[in-house]
Length: 215
Ligand SMILES: N[C@@H](CCC(=O)N[C@@H](CS)C(=O)NCC(=O)O)C(=O)O
Image 1 (cartoon, protein in one colour):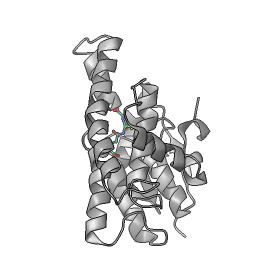
Image 2: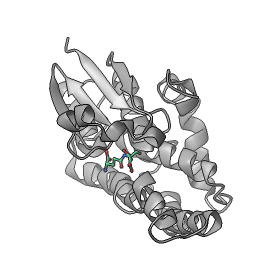
Image 3: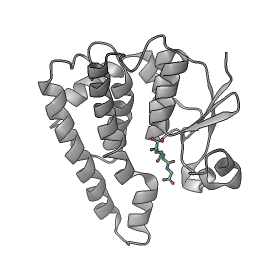
């Protein structure tokens, strides 16, 4: 079995996605964590591994893989048991579009470096930054709520009655939205999926507060 190290941070939602995926797959891994607030992910040592200076990165027998989407897709290839992405092209593309709507439309606008830029060079105060954050969550969560509550393919989870790829993206984003006190009452379907996922060990063991570097 490969030696797998997840380079992350307890409160990184992108690392949280990968922890869920590793747990769902039953893959053993260790963690090396970086305090993002202290800039530990920007050191020369870490950038030698991931020049983007972002977490997560997954180290598999010394090889580094960056970007949570590609990491999780890679895990699905190396460990085909308990597939996270369906093989059927129609199912697969549905699951991908749910995950990408979070990973590509919400997360990049609300990432730490973006919020720091708004507060620093653009001099927005805390409240303005929170309004920014909540705006992008609301935009995408409204669309996702509509999609998931109207499509028959949705089950107890984003796709059917088995947790998978899309859930690994939704649950960390809901965690972050709660941190930023977004009003989630308009998204009962998303909240229900969150509740069901958090009953499972794979999700429970991935929650930020349970990680070794949690403050
Ligand atoms: N698209 C990347 C995003 C990675 C990312 O932005 N990670 C955040 C933590 S969730 C980070 O490292 N932020 C550090 C910073 O913004 O300086 C992925 O999905 O892995």
